[in-house]
Length: 145
Image (cartoon, helix red, strand yellow):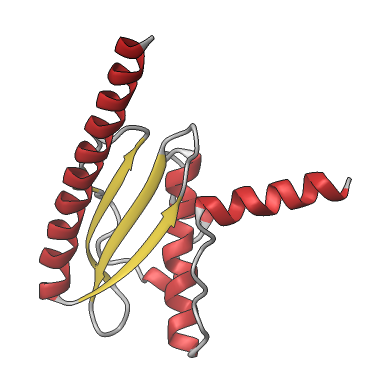
């Protein structure tokens, strides 16, 4: 029993270290884009499916100059280029602009467009709920039933 507990503990620790390394890589890529100009971000958590984060470096008029994505289920996912968006207006992206992408990547791209439009309109951009908040809401809903 003890070896199993130690193995699970070691796996949990390794996953934490790998997640920290992934976030450091993402942060470096974000800072590189941010040093070049403004960045519009969109995200869609995946749960058991591949989550996605998109980064669009935009000019003063909201036209995309460079785009990158972080997409995957594991902590081994890395930031890669996302071609095909250069020269498009980030606030005008629609579902028809992204037919070949997966569902969560499409939602992340539309989230970046929506977030940009809210920012331009001066609206407050709400923080998404944390996993603990989502779990609490789910439990609260189940208890009320």
